[in-house]
Amino acid sequence: MPFASFKNVKKRFTKLHKERSQPQRRRHLGILPKQQDFRLKARDKELKTAKIRELRNKALNRNTDEFYFSMCNSRFDVERGHIPLDIENNYSDVHIKSSFSKNVTYLQYELQKELSKIRQLESKTNFLQSKLRNSRSRKTPKHIIFAETCGEMTELHCLYTEKTQLNRTISSDLCADDICIQQCNAYKELSERLERAKQLKCILRQHEAKKALMVCSL
Image (spheres, rainbow, N blue to C red):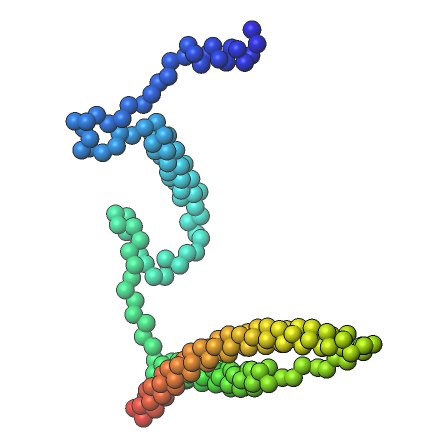
């Protein structure tokens, strides 16, 4: 018997085991788990068991003399494990003053960087505006064509005039649209930079006032 015929006979006489759904009287308990759900649950349990076994072996083979950071900021209890210590950092006045100086220096650096970006964007917007003005008022180059007869000259003149006007209109519109998009993006970035520079100036004034008060108190 060929193999394909054996497969057909096997399909015909094998019993299909269908998984039943949740009965109507137990519908309020939710969907009945299927074989696929049990398979996923078993695989998840195997992974968790293997992870626990790996961690247990790692704890058994751990070096007791090894340094770890919980030694400094926690204490060990047999029942509760590692308990973190509430250690408050007592900073000196000199340390606080130096931190304020660093903050003020960093804010001044960021403010200068923002101001340089703003100057670059302002020059870019002015350049784009002049470029847009020049693109609208730009003249097309001349093209000399020699004709043998008056009729040929008239025909070439009409054809060349229509073609030149069409190309000029399309190119000028495309160039103007591109420049307008760049100009809008530049103005948007410029407004964001100005707002950020304003916030930096406000924070810098606050830090400088706190630093001055601290110097007076010292």
